[in-house]
Amino acid sequence: MNDKVVIIGGGVAGLAMSLFLKKANIESVVYEQAKVYGKVGGHFVMHPSGIAMMELLGLDEELMNNSHALTDFAVMDKDNNPVFGGMEEELEGELADMPLFVNITRYHLIDILYKEVQKQGIDVQFNKRLKQFTQDTKQVVVEFEDGTEAIGSILIGADGVRSKTRQQLFPEKELHYLGKTGVYAIVENEKLGELQKYFSQDAALMYFHDNFNFFVAKHHPTDEAISWSIITTEPEQPSVEAFDEKPIEQLRKELGERFAGWEMPIQQLVESTDHLIAKSLFRIELMQQYSVGRAVLIGDALHTADPNAGMGTTLGLEDAMVLAKLLRDNDYVQAFAQFQEVRKDRAEKVYHSANLLESLVLDNADDYALFDVGIDMSWEK
Ligand SMILES: Cc1cc2nc3c(=O)[nH]c(=O)nc-3n(C[C@H](O)[C@H](O)[C@H](O)COP(=O)(O)OP(=O)(O)OC[C@H]3O[C@@H](n4cnc5c(N)ncnc54)[C@H](O)[C@@H]3O)c2cc1C
Image (cartoon, rainbow, N blue to C red; front, side, top):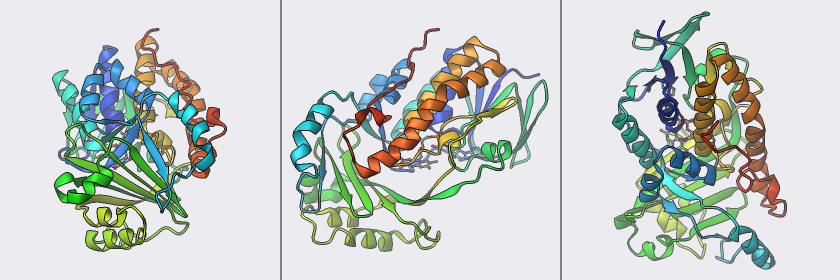
């Protein structure tokens, strides 16, 4: 029998999982379907507990050197007036107590984690796409699309929203269109030119408009680029050709037109963008069961977090730490059972926060998963 843990997916959750397992003296191998890590994806916001997880991995300095601290943000309308009007002071009081959030690109975060994984001698195998797996009382046997196999004591599915691991464990859990689309973009400062003075500021800017939210912020101390995203509520799922794979010139023109006549030159910003990804967003309902036998899920494979909660990355990092700690102190049966037990409330709160944030009713701060961390973040027993 092979005692190694098999991790499927080398995204944020999978790489962090391998590092926390190493910290717990447990060997793992990561199998990632991509051939290499490219400069793909846009930005995400990392919440205080995600930052705490990076600290536990000794990567907080690297994180700060490769992200932008969100110490200030403004929620504005199309005329560039603050949305909260009379509520401003109240809100400022609330926000004054807020712990640190950072904005970071996916590729910078993957880079930090992957460099550490390499430094620690953890095996990451690329071009390995999970096809299926079987398990018995002793082990898990994994088959990849290229016909090769891997054997491990347990399998951790960190293979994202479209998780093959989840499909095999819980075939009844179908992915549903979330009713929203997302566009994530990065613009180099040299492309910004004059626009820099509007968008390359320390404050993150957010615009909540009819059926979409727009966010723009810096994401790196070198200030060579900024990132923006638009999450749109769109009840009918657009076809792949009409959205995800639409030629970039057309997509940015259409997105830009939404901001015609706005006070801030967001239209020009959008039209100056060369790098963006567009995708219809999907979700599964809250999971009641996290594992079957020797196989368990973490990260987006388990939670498919709504972008309005902005918690996907943070949840994945937390899952990795909690599961590694439990595996350090228990056999896998107990560890998986406790993992589900301790993570359920958190997952539920995040799930509901997305709806609360959408309505922007900020008078019940305790209901927001982001204000109330509510998890045990220590690595100690
Ligand atoms: C290419 C990409 C770009 C993204 N860009 C953004 C963004 O701009 N903004 C944002 O908020 N979120 C983005 N996300 C989602 C974000 O990374 C996650 O919500 C969050 O970081 C949680 O990470 P995760 O590791 O659980 O999932 P993911 O980041 O999705 O990672 C899953 C990993 O598993 C791999 N994988 C999938 N299927 C298989 C398989 N069958 N066999 C082996 N490996 C497999 C994937 O290639 C991926 O590396 C992106 C995800 C991806 C994959």
